[in-house]
Amino acid sequence: MSNHDACRRMWRSVAALALKDDNVRITAARAGMRSRVVSGGYASTLRTLDGEIRAASAYYHGPEWQQVCENAGIGFDPEKAMAFVTGGPKAIHSARVKVLEAAHG
Image (cartoon, rainbow, N blue to C red; front, side, top):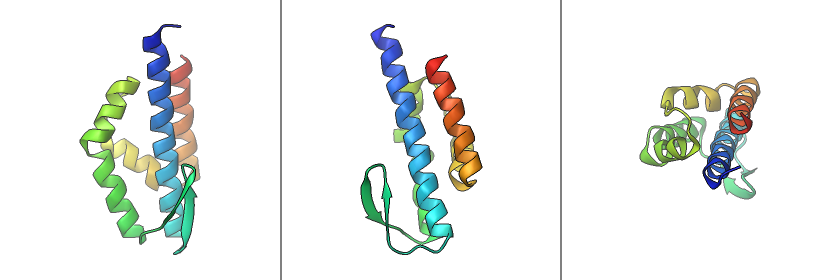
């Protein structure tokens, strides 16, 4: 495996983790949790559901996510990312499977 392939795999893992973390936060906010949630190995206070969705949308439509996608070798599609993070556990599982398959393919 080349260094380039290893870097792409690492960035694909970063993408999958970002999607998972935001899905966890949005799912918790949707359930009415108002406390701290552990996401990505750290605890932070949840926003309202609308606040969590706005924050995720700003990230997935922004240059940081675009750079992650470019580094990972995956398509930059903010609307698809938002569908994954707001779609519940089945959607995020599907997203992770696709990203991880691409990482190993």
